[in-house]
Amino acid sequence: MSKGYLLIAHNNQSNDYIKQAIYCAQRIKMFCNDASVSIITSNSGYLKKLLGADVFEHVIDSRVNNSNNYKLSFDGALFNKTVKWNNAGRDLAYDLSPYDETILLDTDYIISNSNLNSCFGSVNDFMLFQNSKYIGSVEVTDEFTRCSDSSIDFYWATVIYFKKSTKSKILFDTVQHIRNNWVYYNYLYQINSSNFRNDYAFSIALHMLNDTIATLPGKMYYIKDQDFLENINNDKMIFLVGKKDHLGEYTLLSTEGLNVHVLNKSSLERIIE
Amino acid sequence: MDEKLSKALEFANYTRTVEDQKTLLKEKYFDSMIHFQNGGQFTVNQTLITFVNLLLQKNTSSILIDDNNNPIDVDLQEFYDNIIDLYFQSTNSYFNKLQEMKSKRSIEKLVKYV
Image 1 (cartoon, each protein chain N blue to C red):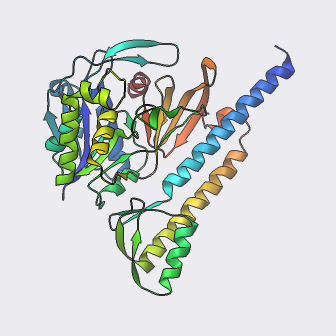
Image 2: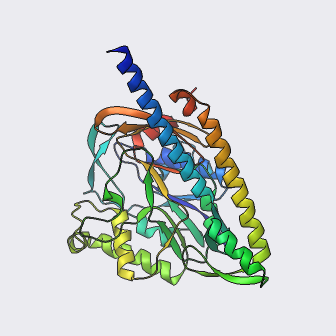
Image 3: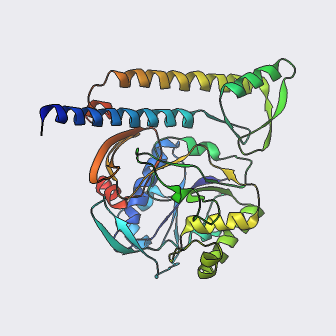
């Protein structure tokens, strides 16, 4: 059975997801026994120009676009801008993945241990994170517990383990159907988000399939885009996280051996450069 | 600013950081207490260790229910050895890291910024 990691990277005007993907792949190889990593991208020419293609076993060209997605992107608490955001195509990962067992990752999920590698060989057809933890001390609301106050349980699409099976195929096909009919499902599930978001689409699909949902080991740790990633040294990361009720003031924090989802992509890119 | 107040605020920042770092250490500990065997995922805790030890007195193999409610067939002795190893490694590391943290008297040293 072939197994490997799969990243999806489509650049926009604001963020260089290709550079993030190269960095993410290097870290996967560093911490996960030189695992196989592949990429789905619409910027394969740029990837080759960066000489980053060598780190990937397979470079898969895909040009899905949802040009109507815009979001407010923060870089710390005091700076934000509206950016175009292409998050379409995650539902195609099942068909495009070259592996029998795949761990699909966001490029801003920074690997610092080999825990995910242990998922290969799982008896489950697919697994996602349900539990997450903000690494700062400020209490985070229910944003990542339920899709909205009156809606269903929230699951993260940041990391997805799946194997090629009928069950996984049905899940990804359902997500694709939801993406194609986002306006309807957005109203039906009372999510109130004009933007298509993969986390919501997977949460809805899991709810529709009405099956037992297996979760990935541990929690998904994250920082918000109002916080900063300050430094990375091997498995150690240093962050500046916002203080409660003190906009623009930060507390210093460090993690060692924890995988962290860095929502402030701009600060991640500064570290990569 | 008054010197006493300034020192109090500095100390408040320090204690906040200590608490945050303690929380992260605890999270790392729980993260490391997950054992994978035969496709199953098991959170190692005192209950599991005691239960497997009890089963060992009756059988050499058994079906255990994993974190995702999958029934997994395991060799009990091998499973027990693995989880007890993991338990000692993780708890010792947690203890040592906490002790090390207690000796750091500044935020910079706590987060190993210097």
